[in-house]
Image (cartoon, rainbow, N blue to C red; front, top):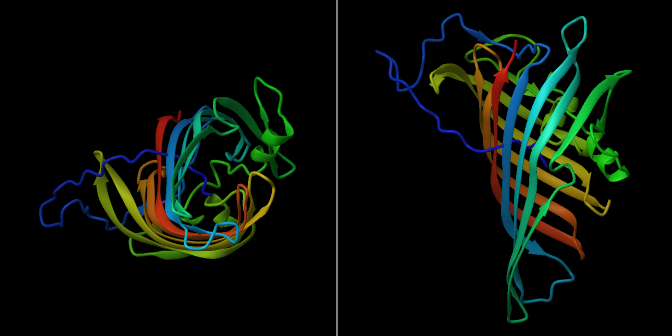
Length: 292
């Protein structure tokens, strides 16, 4: 669902005289989107976990079925070309891992069920090259044939310049803004008929792992349609209450995490006209390896 990247990192708060734990003096300080250099490298890790109840006309009455999903992803992105204005126009993405694990547990007609399935997703262990041509990002595998399945997955690329929760201008503590329209693609790049908004607030400045970070609080409400692995439509309603920590010096989103509630209507494998209602967590972490 989300452009995922993972593994939760600890938040370390510093104590400063006369201030609450972890909060730093913010007078006159602003934060803005990251400016990338040619050759900059970012390691991104993400995890999405959902669990909830699954119902369908194909499931016998008096059954109790719960569905769980765990999606892990890890990539290394290198920005290989910039335009004359300094925007990223070509990248190379090494997908070190892209793994989906699903679990169905419960009881059907007095029979206990506990089925776990783990698969490596198509982009796992691949290197893709993305370039912008006539305003549209196109991708292909670097060292292998780009099949139709892979090509479809590469169509929804979110470039490093787009992948930010911040507005286009520098902002100060206390400012609020709303993300709408194409700015929401950051969260669900493979969606169609996307509607919703993200209400964001620059809450305060804190110390995270020895560096000043801006804490952005956001409330995300989305309604969208996506195609499942069988190219059948799923209607999704999702809300997320989350936090985003952004490095004040670089503008990099060091961590984004949130709690989600999700309702999905559509097919789940062989189950038709199914409905999933549940909750979960999302965590994305980014580490800047090189930006010079």
